Length: 318
Image (tube, rainbow, N blue to C red; front, side, top):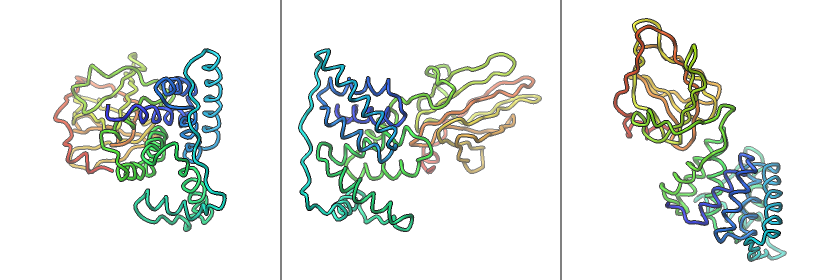
C-alpha cells in the first residue's frame, strides 16, 4: 500500500462521510482510532468535509463519531482525544490568510468573484483561512480527504480532476491517488454491484464487478467498473438481430466504436450497439462507472473479444 496508515484511514472516513454510509463510517472510525489516529484528527477531517459534501453529511458524520467515542469509552477501548489545534490570533485577517493559503495550495491565485463575490470570500476566509489553518492535518492529508470524498460523489468530475492536480502538486503520487479513488464505495445505484467479474476478467483492463439481474427471457447484467477499467475491443456477432443495449446508471465512462471518437457517458444515457460493430466501453480514468448490459435476442449470437484498448488512446481521454 502506498498510502500511509493515517492517510488510508482519513480517506476511508471521507469516503463514507460523503456517501452518508454511517455503518461503514463507524467501522472506519473504529479502525482509525485503533490505529493511532486521535478523536480530534478524525473530527477535523469531518469538519472539513462540510465544505465539500454539505452540512447534513458532515453533521451526521460528527454525530456518528460522538456516538462511537462514547461507546468505545464505555467498552474500555482506545479513544485518544489527542492534542487540540493551535488557536489563531484574535486579530488574524482570515481573508488575507485564506488567500495566501489558497494561492500556495493551488499554485496560482484563484478568483471566483465572477461566479459570486460571496462564494469567493467564503472560500478564502472560511475554508482556506479558517479550516485549513487547523494544524491537526497537513495540506496533503486535507487533499487526500477531498479527493476521497469527491471520488465517491457523482457529478463532480471537474472538481475531482482539479483536486487530483492539487494533490500531486502537494506531493501525492499517482499510486497514492489510485488507491484513494479505488477505495470500496457504497452501492452506486439501486442495482447491487455483485461479485468480482472473474469469468470475464481476462477481457478487461482493470477490475470490474458483475451482478446478473436476469437470465430469463433477456439476459441483463449490472456491470460496475473501477476507475480506469475498460473491456477489450469486442464484437457481438449474430446472423440476425443481436447486439447490445447499455443503460448507464451511475458514474462516468466512455463508449467507442472502431474508427469513431469516444463518447462520454453518464447516468441516464442509453447506448444501442448493433451486431457486428467493433467497440469497447468502460470507466473514465478517475471515476467509477456502472451500466446495465442488455443482450438483444438474435440468431447464432456469440461474443468475440479482441485486443485491449491501447493505453496511449485511453490516456488521451479526459
